[in-house]
Length: 507
Image (tube, rainbow, N blue to C red; front, side, top):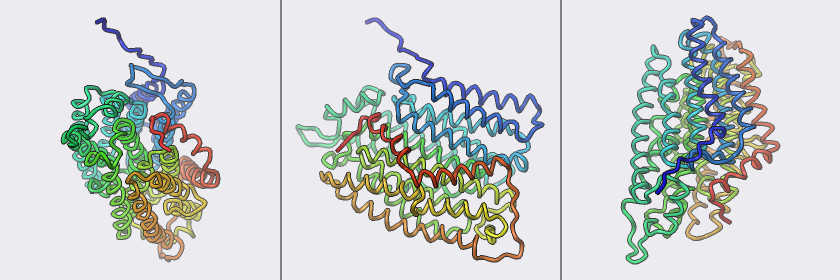
């Protein structure tokens, strides 16, 4: 048999290749100029992200390296989220480069760009090995970034915890993927789905009606590995400490970019590859109910524990756990509306969370504290920040007509539509009920921050000076939350092609 090399087609990878080289150039520039400027490296990083976006517009869709790299509509959608999250994270970091990051600025911005490259490769991966490599390129730079304040005990602790947990979750995920390869003989995700759809390996032996223990172990290991990435209980314990100790812009990047990358990995492995196991008749291989339990636990644990927090970064950390539960409700709706709703939810979450953390970074730079009490009287001294933070918090709560409301509306509507198909899926109604009830809990702790800003008096009023880039990030967040809340259709339309890309259309 004659061996043939796969078609490489590097043109499809032009955005990733350019951003990778640009990240190296940013780090080299900062070193060769002896770190004289506190903002030039950051500005160069922003330019690189903007140019990458332009290149992506002119990059065709298609396959490269055989079936390992697939530039489809879902990849393009999430690449936009990754680039926007990196842009806003870097824009929020200019205060740090003036005050705390006096050296290694190039490395700081370069690592953000390298992590973004990993996310972009992950979004285009259609094969297990390349997907795993993309996931590792995403997370390894984040280990360093979480511990970037090497003289701060909390930052070092955050980096170590994230490293240990990240290494364990990666090993667990790889363990599960190795089982899938052993059962199917391929790492191509589309071929895995085809084999499982026409094989007894899919969960039931037609002759003996016996479940496959190895497949059960594979599903559990994969869900455990991805559960760590998404911070779904019981794999969520690392989140509060890492979010609190990491530099605030990196915390924001973790909460949006890393979470979106985990969702892409889940969609490609579980929905595209193991789609045929999402069926109550395939128990105990059916991963649907197990993910539903994890989503319900995330909504309950995240919202309940957030109520007790006095540190706003820890509060937003538990909030992010709850939002992971909400978005998984939409992920469980394997219909066109479900996957489109997940895309819209992450787009709304991008503007909301990145904007909120940008304000947290400004207050932290000014006061050195992340306590909610530090926001007392903010409405009088910095009304722009107070109003912007209120908009972000109301969007996170799900108050109309902001983007966060429609995000929850779409994921719940998609889940209800899925439950109506029957076939043992009526438990999804209970999952939606948990989401609605816990959304009420969320209003309490978000309202506490608003109460502190508007109604708590202070003897030392807080005056915040803002860099133009920080103002731009906050304005982008506010505009995104309001505009795409009033007119969600463009984003929903943009995301509507994702189900076809995964090949997972249901009635």
